Length: 324
Image (cartoon, rainbow, N blue to C red):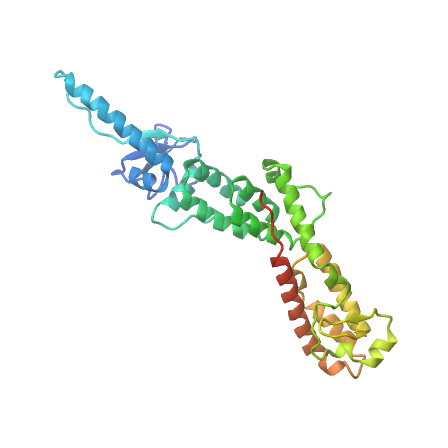
């Protein structure tokens, strides 16, 4: 239990500010026996479930009041008004985070995906759209480093945009089908997992021709396609650029570099796979052995890398994840 909750003599704990205001009109008691003093109106505005619950409670109270007036008890004084107590199954940490998103105060900081999950479950149950949106944003941030976990959670709770974002981040990580899987995948059906893997395969396939040739690249005076000595001294394949009718052999130092990039794209089919300064440094060092290529190698490799990243990004963006 968080230290922000104050223990009372009766064993019940009192939530901290702002959920300890004595003028509140509702008490939510959690599964670990912490009392949250809240405003029923705020909950009714953010949750259709609470709205209907309070509306039914008012209707029942009104009927009880009419019955009491019809048979007045003159022997006792009216009971003092006190907030209604509502038992909820969530624990105090989950309810605290849930309420902080509903209240006009700073949102909670979710540093752990394990805290996000129960809050998402509660928000889904109470139909709190504002909480689902806030938690979805945080889940998207987690997806960068934990894409499979984020994808499974998003699929389970019909958060399509988050699922697509997680699938895109999944491409950035090498994937070993024999390497096990996170527990969150057990919460979705096999079809959803299969569609994620199919999306990855489609992205790899979209880049296949880039891994074997240069037909995607326009002719912009590339030195590595013009140097006769580099092309003569190494066994490289004939390649045709996009706007050329002539097949030429690229320079050997360039082709070795290109094969390394192609291998990366097969394992991580996204432009982020090319975000490595060594991918430029290595061919530039190799080009120093050629007096013709040496002077322009650095500038041309930076320009080539940018063009390749853009082409990879364009192709991957055209691949769609099938959610259902």
